[in-house]
Amino acid sequence: MSALESMKDSFERMLLIRRFEEGMLRLHRRRLLPCHFHVSIGQEATAVAVCRAAEEHDVLFTNHRSNGHLIARGADPGWMFAEQLGRVGGNTNGKGGTLHMIAPELGMPWTTSLVGCVVPLAVGAALVHKQQRRPGVVIAFFGDGVMEEGAFYEGINLAALWQVPLVCVCENNGVPAELRGLDTTQPSTFLARRLADIPSAFGIPCATIDGADVEGLSDLMTEVVGTVRRNLAPYFVEVRTTRYPGNRALWPELAGAETDLGWAWDDGEPPEELAAWSRHSDPLMGFVRRLAGQGAISRDEATRIDAAIAARIDEAMESAIGSPHPPPDSAYRDVWAGQETSS
Ligand SMILES: Cc1ncc(C[n+]2csc(CCOP(=O)(O)OP(=O)(O)O)c2C)c(N)n1
Ligand SMILES: [Mg+2]
Image (cartoon, rainbow, N blue to C red; front, side, top):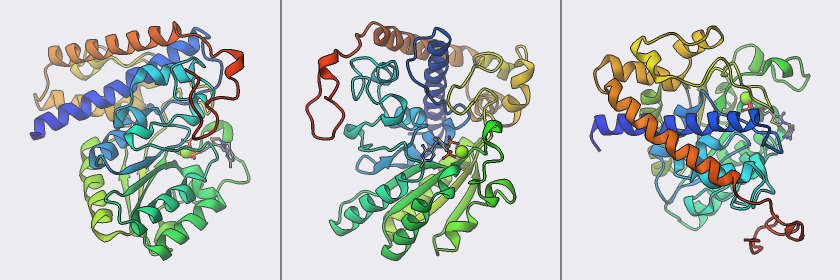
């Protein structure tokens, strides 16, 4: 892939994630979602950069904020809408929802909604990779909240002692306003925001990077994943992102308006509540502005790509809405590993 093709690929993947999550917000406004949900608007660059750096045989663990990770790895938006709508066609036919989305066929075999627990699970998987001399590395996505949990410390301690091929990707999106003041919150989150100091103390190499810079992230993640592959030892990356203004913890809202790529060509301004975030912190609009400024993408081409993605998302969403709810007699199916699915 040429440099230009790879830039456009990053743009398309980030846009697909954005349009999927804007679709989730639309479903919320239509009151079709039976359960809470999360969006990763503003964190798309991390998902895309990590998945570009990962190879097919690598194993990825995700968390409750998983839409971007799954889509960047190639998951189909159709089943992801169905799962979150509680419909047949999702990975558990709608019984797990936002908290339990996985794609084993894409090397994303497991997730947990217990904050922190993804780390020991991923360390265990990485140990298996090392002991059985499997070719891949293990990559774990988690939030900064994980670093307030004991499981994290046990996990990285063992990862450092056992020297397992594990890439920790900590998406530091700060503490949402409604959760500020909880006594479980670590001083590091509030004060220094230097989360990388913590794994450093365990002897794990660390990097901190701006989550709004998809190209910087891609370069770093390629280097980090390559280093872990070569050295069979853990690495920790803190990605600093800024929360999208509509990103409430459980029930996100659309802030201002859906993303309009025209903003990159000075065609109108984002609404006031989005303006500062869009200009300084949004990895998607930042990248489109850069591509447009360099003449790497024309407005027509961006509009064509956007229309194709919007059509794909609309079709996937309407087909998921048309899917039935799982029948009551399937209540105990799809909920344990190894069971047959109900559809
Ligand atoms: C062990 C545990 N404690 C508390 C919760 C409730 N909870 C769900 S998400 C969340 C915040 C997680 O923060 P972070 O890991 O930074 O992810 P973010 O939502 O900010 O992306 C909390 C406390 C939980 N799911 N598990
Ligand atoms: Mg967080």
